[in-house]
Length: 88
Image (cartoon, rainbow, N blue to C red; front, side, top):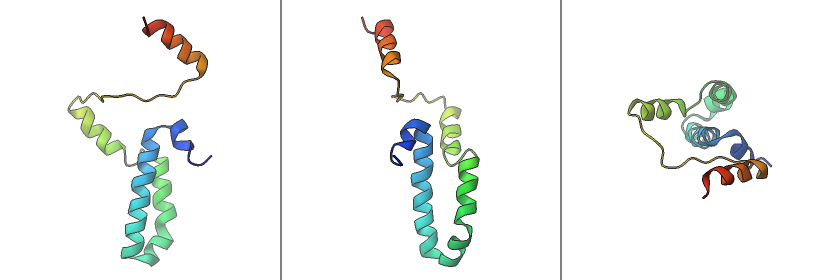
């Protein structure tokens, strides 16, 4: 169940969580005591705020970059409706 949460919330949350986990691992290697005291605060700030994805998203939108693929999960009813409209 925990592995499926990013698929329902969106890809930006998964990117934030993976980069945040890497930062936490490196932070624990650099300063274990400070990481143990503050990792909850930093994680809460990233989750409540726009997170790490806000910076790359702003950078890409500045150059009017169009992503090559869009991933969206739909119900079977919504999938049938899309197929009726877009598939000849």
